[in-house]
Length: 246
Length: 257
Image 1 (cartoon, rainbow over the protein chains, first blue to last red):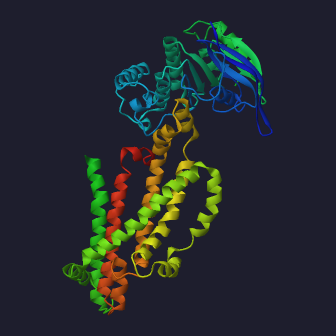
Image 2: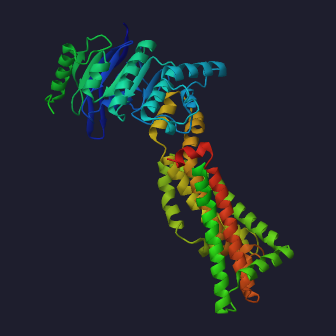
């Protein structure tokens, strides 16, 4: 697999606050990488830099060997919550980035992604008429509709209830396997990272650097009570500095 | 259907009951107190009819509406673009905001003497006062609307490759529209309130003029109260019309939340 995303000696500070210190990371094409870290450690900042929303203080990020200079519709960012446009219907939201296509192509693309994320029957609904999980699926569909190579997900399921969150993870894995995207997924949820990722990158406290890079060598679908799953999960708990006890 | 009936009851039947009740109280209060100053509801009704017969009613209403419309539209045409730019460029906002906050608390009525000197006896004087009264609320509402657009909407727009003009048309404009519409409705209420005072100078027509003229020329309190009620009723109708705009889908998404 080719290397897709490369972070090189990335540093970021806001005023006097050091947020990221010397981050180096390679992500291969089609890989699902979770960036795991404590709240406020700077992992969202990292994602905002690779998405081109903010410029790093030093170092650089390149995709396919080309330095990131700004947002790009080949790489779509999915926000924590409520990133869908509330004044547009489901189908208008999905079609938002398709303004370069003909009407026929656009209709076809919208129908495909409505189907993929299971929003049939809600094409004319507005986001406020949808549940939290449906809104998040809509945002994923809007991102996928422009056929990006990379998806950036910033704690996308953080605001959902725990049952919906589990369903959404399964959905996302299904979509990832169907669409073959490279995914960078930021989360502070250890279980989530072990359930989803090919590789979990553990960030330290601020100023954040990469503490560990752990390959999750379990095939999908993953049995979350298998010894290997528990072993990897506990390794991550220890890495984050938590005793695995409530 | 039951809920529909309940809403009809709440929105129409109840206010009508209040209105009829007040009319009755008013009628009997005038009757039993034997006052010679305050007119009875029937006297006010007759005053309205007599105005209509002299064809003054419609021309006064028309003149008032025209002045409010002109002053208000001028304020909207200047205030909305200015507010948008100020909401976007914080430098301009910092330059402009102290001036707005300084001028805003000055009652438009304080400008009356200047309005008369500048515009003389003409429609321009009341229009200018209405313009002043509505300009600042419009600027403030628009600036806030733009400043409150969630950054993630702009980021998403840029992420999908929108150019600056596309971003304005497809993201910023729809995002700010609901707040601006509400701001415009509130500003319109202000314009209508200022109307009476602004027509007490410099003009010889309109509902405000009717009130001041009826008092000055023979203490016709039936006409005074008729003028007051006409202003109230027309204000109510226009506000209801504005509220209908707020139910449009492109606006309602934000207001229902």
